[in-house]
Image (cartoon, rainbow, N blue to C red; front, side, top):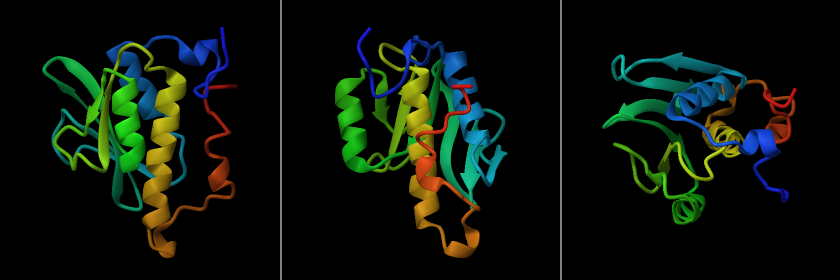
Length: 147
């Protein structure tokens, strides 16, 4: 198997919708200062840092999805590369992207997207609201799932 920017063979294994939700939750909750809530009702799990949403999960027409904050250019590239990555469901289509399980959607990719969404929000928080991140830029390198 060739090297991938999204991880090892285990991290690249295909995911089910339930795996997608569970894995996104576990990555999000492992990040500093994250709070989980259900402000939109019991069908949405919402993850915030500093009071700002960076990831949420739900089921749309029977398909589990993860919706994440994303840089506009990155979002466009992801949509072109992956058939199950679309503009953010019920969110600003420029700054949010939704991911469903499918070809190429792996643990490594989901982990990268969750961590990137987190950093996008943290970088825009006032300093007083930012969590203590001793190695903030190393978030992409330290994986809770690689141990």
